[in-house]
Image (cartoon, rainbow, N blue to C red; front, side):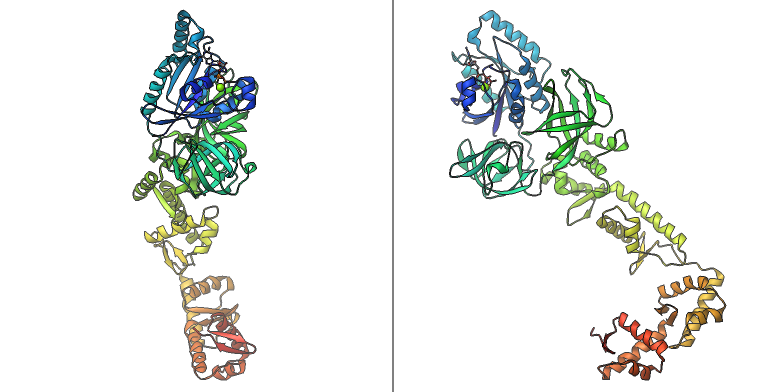
Length: 634
Ligand SMILES: Nc1nc2c(ncn2[C@@H]2O[C@H](COP(=O)(O)OP(=O)(O)OP(=O)(O)O)[C@@H](O)[C@H]2O)c(=O)[nH]1
Ligand SMILES: [Mg+2]
């Protein structure tokens, strides 16, 4: 298993010298580093362990001004080599580096008590005791301490053995197959072009694959892969990796960018997080405070919005939102570190809960939904993420980023959950899921809405699909509305006649006089055949008002017994069928039908013939060409 170790410790405590003693590689390469005798930038080395395993090494600077580089280097390491100089003991960055490692979720480490040649035995013992005491409350409480001297070589072999043991005893990295490489260096290599390096935190990548540089979403392609200076075909998580990128200039990238496959990561201006204020912090963390925010190899200014408190006291953990000036890309469970301005020091950090946050109201019920994301069990987490996402739902690829699961495991989980109807796949094309409970709630609401429509429109057979979508479904994804209607139809909670939907129990109940009116209207129109009186004539004859008659006429047209040819002119369906037949018979022997021909054919005057001809055009039986009609080909 590939393993990467990172150094940590106060300035001048012998980190770089120790790495050189172990590996033979001098990580301080910059002119300035040589001149000043300190590390400024991250250094990279490797060590071939006695068992043949090659250990990747990241050497960090100890200077307090370069803590931001240290954070970038520590992101992605498997374990830490903490160095403490025997002659100086615990110093500010000893503590700060250890706190940073702890905030970053690093769980393992080894301690080198360096420069043993500079102290006598008594002092060494004292230093060791002080160190054990200091470590007892940290994640390194159980970690072994090795007294070493890079100058005399004392303890170096023992330390090497210990490193091998440490590397062999580590838990396997997560098997999440989402390729992600936070960039820590960008440079040009003669003959190769632009090269980036970083610790490959998850997934694998091969030569020739397309990649995206997030958050800018710049496209590129892998032109070369190197691990510890050797070209390889592909590389997987836990390796120090150098990638040669096609078609990009050095200016197109910077430390902090993240390489990933197209359409995987989700740039966002807002993250929901679990935030802890370090117990060593001199002050509480205040709502809306601007801070240095470190994630992966990126450092930005960000504002912390505390969602359920005005401040987080030292040692306290709260739910918060981070708002960024430019988009960030993260994955559920990612760690981050925050540092205050003055004094410039590490004050806290935490865990990313939702990499696709939306601004929410403080102290609202939404905050509870965010807090539910601290659930680490994948099943509970999927439910919590979908709950927060609401009716928009989440796609399967998005859920991978929001749960940090391998795509295989997630797919299986989603299928199991669908089978139990805990979640529903409402958009197959996008693989978009929504919470089952929400579906039940929406269906209940939809049926209530249709029922209400029936009550206010008792004379209508139902409500059109289009109206449901535009009125009830406003604000919901159209595909979700479609899915809900199909669910209702499948379970016969709604029935449909063409595009009109109704509750199964809905019938039109006419009052007695309405039923009579309905019969009278049918009789009137059927008796008058192809020469019906106009509506006013009908109303006069039946002694009813337009207001009374119109709903009944609408019902008759809905039921298909009458046809409205134009305002005020209705035909019985039978009469209109007769006219259609006459026209069809005519076209059996003729090409064109003029208004005159129509008059001869039917014996109807212009009052009827013009609206009828136009109606037949509208029905697409005929089409108008100049002054005549032609039969439309079916
Ligand atoms: N006597 C003695 N000096 C040492 C030993 N290890 C390192 N030094 C000296 O301590 C000084 C600092 O060593 P570095 O390795 O640069 O320390 P560092 O921790 O990498 O420093 P930064 O990277 O700047 O934080 C150098 O002058 C080293 O020669 C040692 O084992 N014995
Ligand atoms: Mg150094």
